Amino acid sequence: MNHQTEKSGMEVENPLELQMLFGEKIFLDDRDNLITQQPVESAQTSESMPPQSHSFPILFFLHLDSTPIERLGDIKTLLGKMLLVTQLDGSVPTMDLAEVSDLKGFSEEQFSAKVQACRKAIVFSDQWPFQQNVVSKMQVFLLGEKRVFHAPSVSSIMADIELKRAFATALKNYFLEA
Image 1 (tube, rainbow, N blue to C red):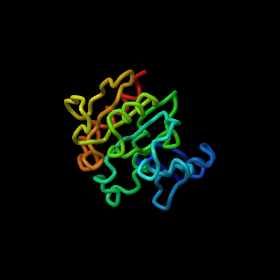
Image 2 (spheres, rainbow, N blue to C red):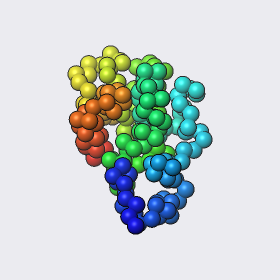
Image 3 (tube, one colour):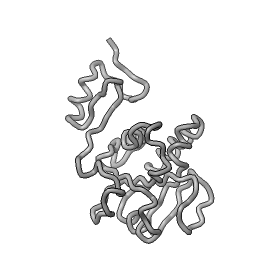
């Protein structure tokens, strides 16, 4: 019996092999979707707590109030699936290494300081929220000493299959950069 799914990108004879391979970090839900276990403290958004001094290697910035979470499902699960196309330090990163922040909670200075403390920053927004002149979406640009990936809003990406493919390629290339 072959329990392979196109969605997960992982080939195993028995779905329980995933739990054996990854410990308690990955579970299959009743729809055969991969779910990463979130630590309690990282399950909160920046809206419920102020920006913290410790940093995560990966930061996702988006407008939470304009992201239709009910249509897209759990945003952390969706972002975790996006990370499946990437590599960080030779392995596929999980949401345990990422933080999701609401763009509206940051001034330009706070945003810049937060970006400088991480390794990869992805901004989902149809319009750049700050003063810098960002010409287009799907662009990697330098902000201080760090490179930031500006992508269209999550809802825009999920609504257009061609945009979704272009985003996956651009995200993969961004993570391949040193």
